[in-house]
Structures are given as structure tokens and as C-alpha cells.
Length: 546
Image (cartoon, rainbow, N blue to C red; front, top):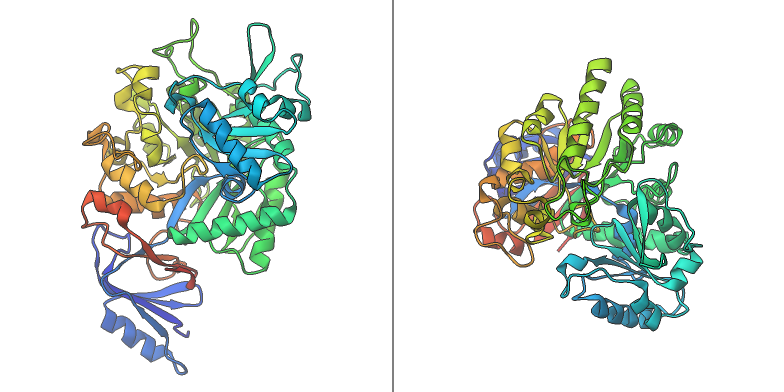
């Protein structure tokens, strides 16, 4: 054994407890081989290195932590929307969004015009847009604006024509086309119908354009100390999603994969694609580790599946709906469980959460626990039934949550669900107190992959942009700094099925490390977002340095 690198600091957080301490981490190849007091680790290295001494990186009093792991993002969309191929903005209103698209058109004169990020409930006035405003600005060029929550498309007439949509078009199950009083398409396309159209919209990009966008996004991940991600599918239609394993594999072959990637393609009746990827990608940097499915939509659009009607119901019995019939979901999950494969289900409304837990419970009773290291997960988990709060731990289901989502729609939970249900929204403290494993992520491109925003939101329950509300939204559900760091490292590793290899700084683990310029466990809460990543190591290789 040759020790290649020693990383040391006065403040090392291994993740095995809640403290930081002076320590050194010895690395051989891509693995940690010793962690402990500096003198002991240096003596260990001297006893083993007959040749060159190891490189020593002394980071003074900077905070050394396990590399962050984004447990839920959509790599293809994140990369494209963060690249010159598209643009991102919230916009102040419909007219402002159109003007921003005019400016973007000057930079990209040909082909589709793409944007992501609009949220009409954050606009003044808070009303849905339509194709008319886009048609005036772009009468002949197709334009597609993906909503900030990634569940709705806003299209102009040229885009509708390019996609072959007419007033007689029938949406797929789990999706819809908005229409005006005369039955004409408004340009608003929702849920599964929006996802079905995305391959046609994105199909104009070349493989090299996509690969370039991926490289840029990997660089952004490194700058935020993110060393692992879970690439979660956005299903276009059965058998087709946006997991571009070919792009990841090509980058890996060229040595350009600078974060570990865990692929979660869409769960369908045919598991052949997943099983092919699972057999093909067996190295430490690229693996196919489970499935993804959608059970509902989002509360702000009344497409999340809830048990009682929305407080501001748009029609009698307005409870949203499952995007996949519960009987179909049960059949899919049981089939995966029979083969020992974990499933991660998008569940936002309390009815979706409850139904998914029932299915996981049946799968466990029928086929036993999943093989060691594998966990089923529920994604987003915004609105619980009180009786379900303890079931995740009982069933060994990971809660994969995105802390910055809590404040994306100020006042929205109260408006849509009413005060009686609000106390059971994003109950992070309660879940931890009931021994639930939390896994943190961003759902990028819904929110940015900024790691400090994730941690800030979790410990303050305030918006990372506005820092509102004062004192935090539902402040009793705040969690501690060490708990947040563990959720963002070892919790996410559990969601990826890699807990034995990732998430803590321990002997035998992969050497994924982030170095931060201040001690997050001791700084003022308002200074969390000021923290900068000094260096990021993936498998002992420095992939980012400020």
C-alpha cells in the first residue's frame, strides 16, 4: 500500500458523530486508508511508503467534510438549462418572460427557443400565461418554456404545430392540455403530457452539444462540493426517459466524469433497459442502482394527490389525482421487489404518500426486506397524514427531500391545503425524531445545485433568496447542522444504495471530500450561504479548486 495523499485540517467532520476535530485523512488510490490524529496518520504513511512521500494538503482551519451527494436531480435538463442551449429565469410576469425570450433569441438565432423557471403564482399578477403573448413575439419560431417545478410547458402556436398538437389532440394518461372556452389549446401542457413532448423539443441538440452541457454541469457540481448525484428519470412516455447513460459513459471513458452518477430509469413493465445498464456499469463512478416512478404532480397546480379536497378547490372533489393508477403502481413495485430492486416514487400529496407506503409494506411482507444496502425511497414528501410519519422508518424507506422547496411558494401551502394540513408539511425534525433516514438533494433544475442553499434551508427553514420568513417557516421542524450534513452525505448515499462506500470519512470508504472555508457547525446561520468550497476531491482526485 502506498499513501498518495494526506488531507488534514483543524476541523474535520467525519460524519460518524456530530463533532469536528483536528485530524488527517490518508488516501491510497481512490480509498481512505486511515483517519485520525495528524501525528498518527503521518506515522502510518511513513511506515508504508518506501518510495515517494505522500502529497500533503494542509487546509488550516477549513472544514473538511464528506463530499455532498445530491440525492435527486435531473441531469439532462439541469445541464441543458444551465448551458448556452437554453436560459433560466422566474420572470416578474408573463410580459417580462416574453421580453427575456426576445433577448435570448438574439443570442441563439436558430432552432427552438427554450427556457425554464417560470412560476405564475410568484408573478404580479399571478395568472397563467398563454400562447398569445409568445405568438406576438415569435409568430414562426417554436418556443417552449418549462415551469420552475418541471411539471408544465408553456408553448406558442409554432411549437404546437411543430409538435403536431391540434384542438383534437388527446393527452396521454396522467397529463392534460389546457383549452379556452372555445376549446382551443392555450399553449399550457401539464404533467405526463408535458413530459411526453420534451424528447421532441430536446431532440434538436447534437450529442456533442449535450456532452458539452454535461461537462459544464459537472464543473458546477464540483464548485459546490458535490461528488455524487442520483440522476432521476423524467418519464416522457413508457419506455423512454431522460437518463442519458451513453453521455455519462462517454465522459467516464475520457476521464471527464467528476462526480459519481447513480442512474434511476423509469420503472415500467419491461426491466430490460435497467438490467442492461446494471450489468454494464459496475465501476465505482457510474452505476444503475434502482428505479423511479411518479405517483402524482404538485400542490401548486392541484395535481398532487391529496386525501381531502384542496382548501381553494377548483371543482367539487378537487383532490388532484394519481398520475399512475394505484393498481398499476402496485404491480410495478411488486415486480421490482421480487427481483430485489429498489424503487423511488415521486409522492407529494398525502394520499400519494399513504398509497406508496401501503405498496412498499405489501412488497416487504411478500418478498422480505430488500437486499442489504438497498432502500426504497419516497421523493419530495410535502404533505403527510399524521399516521404515516412513523411508517418510513418502520419500513426502512428513505425520505428524499429538497429543503429549498419549502419556501418556493410563500403562502402557497396555506392557500392550497389550509392551516390544518400545514403542520405536516416537510416535517424534517419529526421524521428524524422517528428515526427516518433523510436524503437531501435539489431536484435541479427546479432549484440550483448550490449546496449552501440546501444546508441553509434545512437549518433555518428560510428561503435562500429572500431569507424569509423571519424565524423560519414552521421553525419547530428545523434540524441541526450536523444532522443536515449527514442527510446530505450518508443519507443520500443510502438512497443510492452506496452507504457502505460513501457518505462518511472512514477507512475503506471512497475518498470523496469537500473542503469549506468556514466551520458550518459553528458559524452564524446567516453565514452559511457565504461559505465557499475551497476544494473538491472525488476518489482522491482534486476535481475542483478555488
